Image 1: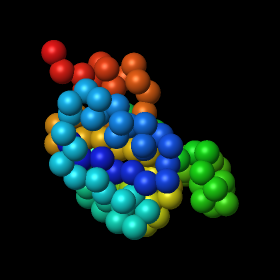
Image 2: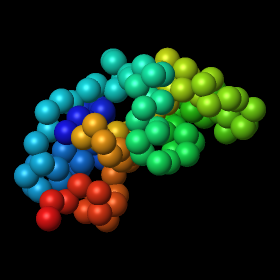
Image 3: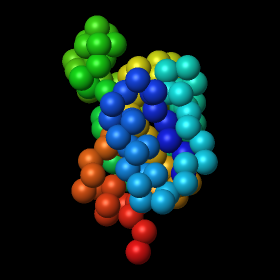
Length: 119
């Protein structure tokens, strides 16, 4: 399991704790702010998640608000949005969890039970 997150993020810590409690091995933890995924990686994560691209944006984050993205995103292409996300890890909603096939964005325990719980 690969987790893109931020060490000081409570939601990210809750995610790691939940995965460990459910005996799900984390093979890689990627520091989202230092090494955000590339636009190509994000496009693959987006495709596998089945979500709309807006769900990948940290809409409550300072950078999102400072850049006035609420108003700008509707006029952007998906490629432009992916490039924007790849350019600044603080714009990405965290954590992103993937096993290479499935992808979840953010942490909601019910969703994690549905997607990641074994058995």
